[in-house]
Amino acid sequence: MKNEDYLQLASKIKNWGLELGFQQIGITDTVLDTAEVHMDEWLKAGHHGDMEYMASHGHKRSRPQDLVPGTISVISARMDFLPPDTNPESVLDHPQQAYVSRYALGRDYHKLLRNRLQKLALRIQEEIGTYSFRVYTDSAPVLEKPLAEKAGLGWTGKNSLLVNRCAASWFFLGEIFTDLPLPIDTPERNHCGTCDRCIVACPTQAIVAPYEVDARLCISYLTIELKGSIPTELRPLMGNRIYGCDDCLLVCPWNRFVSPTREQDFLPRNGLDAPDLIELFAWSEEEFLKRLEGSAIRRIGHERWLRNIAVALGNAETSDQVIAALQSRMTHPSELVREHVTWAIKQHIQA
Image 1: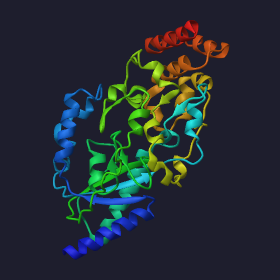
Image 2 (image 1 turned 30 degrees about the vertical axis):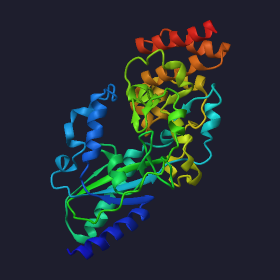
Image 3 (image 1 turned 30 degrees about the horizontal axis):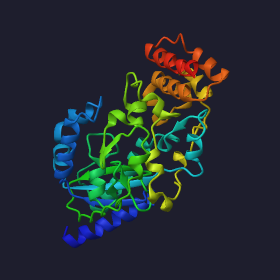
Image 4 (image 1 turned 120 degrees about the vertical axis):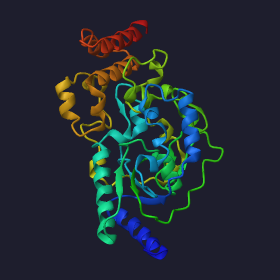
């Protein structure tokens, strides 16, 4: 194929992506030298906490051609997920309710994005014949955000998330690694300016410097990635956030341009957009697994689910119902659950 043919193909790929439900497609090369330096410094500082998988693959994460030999271009895709009318601020203002990160209210995005990316990759194959490709969506050691930034899908915000002028940070990313020498797109320039709202809004001050997040302080890490006990000094700062945290996203000025998702699979299920803490705490493991089938939340397991909700109940307004709910789990077989329940009860007794 000639250069003009690849230019035409890149245009078709972007149109096919839109037809498949993506909001934006960008293309970049595999050079991530700057991101690699930042990643190495972040790991050296220990900011990854217990996420050993961040370091276990060495530089495969920042060198796509090492992960998939022969990779020349990366097709990066963006799909918006913010459901309409979930009133996140209202939930955060009601301590008897549980806050679940908006990305996890519906079905797990991994399978949906992977299937759409596979369809896009096969559509390319229909057009040009056999070529080499691999599809990823948060499923391998890939530096998704730096790749998407280079592909023009947004810029890195001061909270380390990718920011897009039309979608703020309410979107998922996925990639197609390919051996096609596609023309690359121009990166978006940074539009954060002097704004520091995300830094100020972080409940645990996990954004330790602009563009630098210490995961060990981040509520998303504490409620999702951390497998053990949540540090006691951080528990009061978590409020009613039981799975993830969106505070730095909610205050971003670029939210004024965001449109709700049209993907039915991303709409809230099981009333998770504004659930009652006590009701969630009463779920048995069987009920947890059944209700959250197909949800990203399911992977933390029932034990950590109860751990997180116990902390939120400890931060809730004192009432006989809250104390009774906590006491009902005092003899839970998990030491992790019992420890957090005991802490939560003490918050109300001290109050």
